[in-house]
Image 1 (cartoon, rainbow, N blue to C red):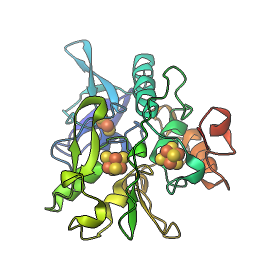
Image 2 (cartoon, rainbow, N blue to C red):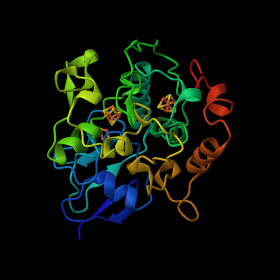
Image 3 (spheres, rainbow, N blue to C red):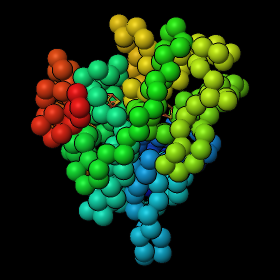
Length: 269
Ligand code: SF4
Ligand code: SF4
Ligand code: FES
């Protein structure tokens, strides 16, 4: 079993495992939105999991979700430079996001709120103006809906749907215009979707959501991942960041009346 050193702490990893999952299992929090554990080709789109790897005395930037562990590799996951890059990446994601937590079906289980909280950032970008597009919500399916304004292009739903041997969801266009859509942009009700609803479960945002919000759908990546601040476990592995996050998420109106609002997090909500 290989071991690696993250921020001076030696941890064990499974052979061939990616840095991200080894870190999370050991209670070292590295932000991540688009990673799917076990995926052969990580999507690598969000850039939140950037870390520095020491190679031949130099440090090189890489994404923790794509880089396999090598014996005794040295990783720096919480440097100033990394924090700056991650903040930029998160602001970029949020600049194209329709922030409306008050009316969002995922507001109690939102990957963006958790990430913002763990990174001690507001949801609303401070340095970038909003580029959120006015795209129509697909409300045609009886069980779930798709709001492309809240899609962060993490690719999890696409990967999952295709992994199940179906291809009902895919990316269309490139660059800023990129969007997740159905084949030929057909409404959700017109495709042969089997309504497994797994795409709703993996979606970390309110882009894919159940119409009946009394059914609590917890985004899969957030079910068991313990957040830790500064990458080090604290007490039982629960960090200040995660406690802060928990308070926000269990408050009566998370992301609306609490700290995130003060920081500009509730957007137009
Ligand atoms: S930040 Fe989360 S809860 Fe708020 S609108 Fe976006 S997806 Fe919904
Ligand atoms: S719909 Fe959800 S899961 Fe799919 S790419 Fe957008 S944010 Fe990710
Ligand atoms: S989690 Fe690694 S690039 Fe998104």
